[in-house]
Structures are given as structure tokens and as C-alpha cells.
Amino acid sequence: MRLPSKKNSPTPSEEELDRNANIFAKALVGGLDRAAAVQSSVIIKYVEGLRKRHSLESPAQLQTYIDRHFLNIVSSTGAAAGASAAIPGVGFVTGTAAIGAESLIFLDAAAWYILASAYLRGDDITDEPRRRALILLVLTGSKGSAIVDTFLGDVDSMASVSAVTALSRFSGPTLSGINGRLTKAFTKQIVKKVKWAWVSKLMPLGIGAVLGTTANRKLARRVINYAGQQLSALPRN
Image (tube, rainbow, N blue to C red; front, side, top):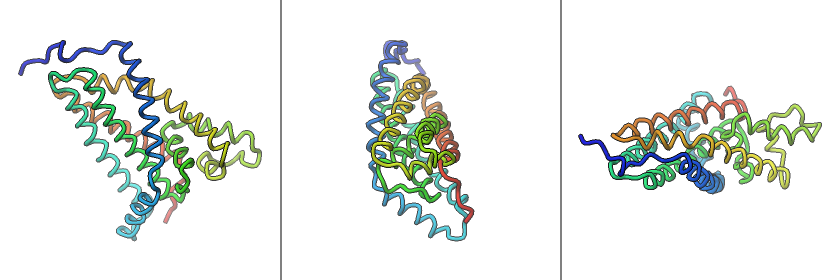
């Protein structure tokens, strides 16, 4: 097998990576808006269907079905983007376009996962601004909790309330302010971390397909862990 030429598979410069990372982050924020706008009835119907089909199983067991479905989705999209970027003759721009599309799919899947997991726990997902805050809270991890904590610090009666519980009580300008700061934190994390994902998926000879799957599963596992930490605790039955 002939190796793809450097002309066909150029190595992106640091400047190119930075520029594309910022453009990509803006696109993801736009995708986040769309993901948060998803009809909650679709997610509620899915979770209630799980409860009906597995009526004898605990919420923790139902959560494993949601986890598995999420991992399956992101594994297939990761391989597709990695493979397309690794085809000889596909340049950096084409490759990043494929990865950008896949990443929006990942974000949709992550938003679906977070909201389904939240509903399973009894969290309110019917209000769009709160859905957005829940998604961002999980995706930003401990930084998201710290941001919500700064708002809690101004309300003495809520000092001992968890971040996700606080979101159900905030509304209007306060919730808008939380979402604004969570969005900034999310954007910074994307710009900082996205470059290594692009480099791994743009490797030649099909290696990108393997790393695409591995990277997506790693990110998905992180989302699953953050959801377990940031969302309300699973009920026992």
C-alpha cells in the first residue's frame, strides 16, 4: 500500500489548529442551542418506555441501558469521521469538516444522554433554559458546579443546595446569567481540548478510524462520569 503524500495529507500548523478550534467552538455552541431546544416529550417517552419494558429493574439498571446506547452511538460516529479523514487525498479542510459534523452528532447524543439521565433521576427537563443549564453543567464538570456555586453564594437559604437542585429553583435573569457563564466555560474547554482530537483523527492509513472510536468513547465515558457526579442521585427504586 502506498503511503499518502504529504501534499495530500498536510500536517496542520499550530496557527491552523488554533484558528479552526475557535471556529469549531462557535459551531458547537450553536449546536448546543439546537440540542437544548429538543422536545422533552421525546426523551420522556424514551425513559418511560425503558421503565415499562424493564419494570422489575432498578433505576440504576435502567441507567446502564442509557449508558450503553450512548456509547454505541458515539462509537459509530467516531469511526466514520476518522475513516473519512484518513482517506488518501482528503486534506485538512475536508477532514475537519467531517470531524465538525461528527462532533455535532456527538453533542446531540451527549445532550440526549444527559437529559434522559436527568429525567430518570426525577430532575425537571421541561423548561428549555434549564435543559441548557443541565447539559452545560455536566459538560463542564467541576467548573460548571463552581459557576453555579457563585450564584448560590448570594442566596443564604440555598447555601447547602446542590448545583442541579438550584437550577430547578432559579429562573429569569439568574438562570440566563448562569447559562452565559457556563457557555463561556464550555467554549474555553472546547478550544483547549479539541486540537488533540483533530490531530488523532487526521492520521493516515486508517489509524484515524481507530483513534476516532477510542477518542469518542473516552469522551463519552467522561460525560457519563460527570453526569453521575453532577445530576441528582439515582432513586433506589
